[in-house]
Length: 159
Image (cartoon, rainbow, N blue to C red; front, side, top):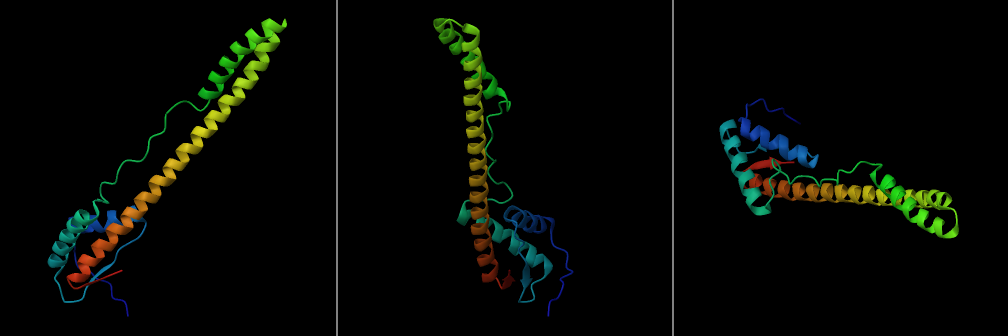
């Protein structure tokens, strides 16, 4: 049968549980098996958080910052590609006898290539974000295992 604990925990222990669970999208439940007082539980949780950080090298309350995008405007690559293509096309068109037509074809081709570059950049940023999230999730899971091992060793049930 489940029993709800109505004992006040210290702010530090409560924040530790909140942040550790939020970072990994996994909540950690701690139950004192040996009659530990709320004060003892809070102290044990704080000490186990420090120990888990030392063991894993990861602090769920201060995860590494996410990767930053290049910050260029979404249309920047398309416009730059179109301008470059128009310049090259105008030169090629002038040689063929119609600089305007060459510029138009060059602008279209350059805009297409610029759009492809933009899409590549977006895909790279999405991959970096997914990689960051996977690494953060794995680090949080490792931290939670260390945290649970410490608390288990001190007489708590952790799930």
